[in-house]
Image 1 (cartoon, rainbow over the protein chains, first blue to last red):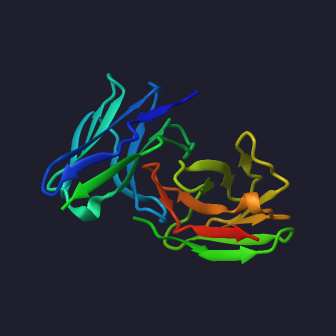
Image 2: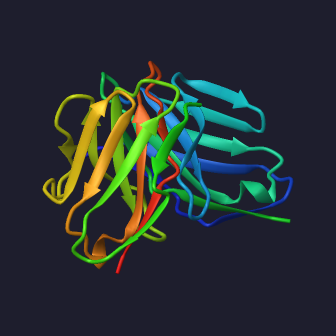
Length: 112
Length: 115
């Protein structure tokens, strides 16, 4: 059974701070890793994808992947109240299968 | 990212009737489409995976005769909830995958209320 674990939160940070979201996965053969943002009542939106060890930066977002530790994280710099949402970690096992295994999500609240 | 649409965005139907939800990938050819269900304050639950031109693969516990999925083309998949009951009321979300990077893009979702 492939599993993706996230701290459910809520994670509360002040505006302007760095929010750090963490995720671990059980399938060592996983190849592709994604972070989705889901606002309340809305569908998930893909915000970051990462495929190799190390850091990947996109604006205020940085994804970090460590395949040896089976760990992926998302850092949000200069957090804004509009970043308040549930963040879903998703993992793909590779091959031709597009199926993703999702974590239960971490609720982030950024306080003005 | 790719654009995926869903229609309708919201539907209210009477118990016992059937409801069809359409999912379209607007700017790319989706090899695979997924249907999820999400109850309030709960996680996404994958219902089924559909590949163009073949039968859908349902997750354990999902009734294939109740949730009919058709994936007739690389841009369109439909989910029909047959003989809907109040317990089927939920947020139904489709996603499409088809790129080399295994990304999935979600539609905006359909909120179904069965009275």
